[in-house]
Image 1 (cartoon, rainbow, N blue to C red):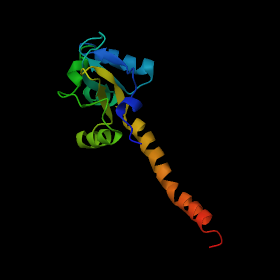
Image 2 (cartoon, rainbow, N blue to C red; image 1 turned 120 degrees about the vertical axis):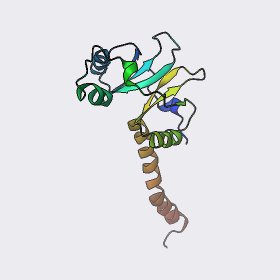
Image 3 (cartoon, rainbow, N blue to C red; image 1 turned 90 degrees about the horizontal axis):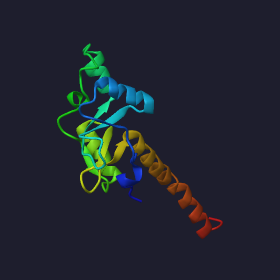
Image 4 (spheres, helix red, strand yellow; image 1 turned 90 degrees about the vertical axis):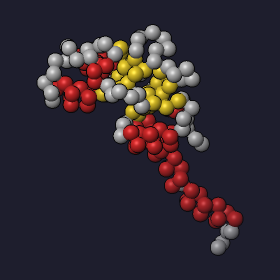
Length: 153
């Protein structure tokens, strides 16, 4: 069974506006126990996502650079290009995109380009692991089927 991102995504990821400070982003991550927030143009319904801000971004760009997290905005820290896929994309497409782009999370877009949710590498690992477990059970099932078809052999 092919899993689409619409079945795997976190439908209500934590969001903040581009103008929000890095400290506000860190506080949201702590409050919601997440490692990333989706940066949006505005907090209005159907708002367009513009990027992802991760805890690693905060460490590398703020702490390591000794920048002021009150002054640096979320928009300053996100990349110039949103890496995303539509909700109908497959889990395999997400894996390929993550590998190609070197990211662990993808923004998932609805049919209007709005934020449908967020999918992470851990979500995809769970699906792939379940599929591999199903595959691993093929050989024992085959042996059992053969014993039923050919008793005494």
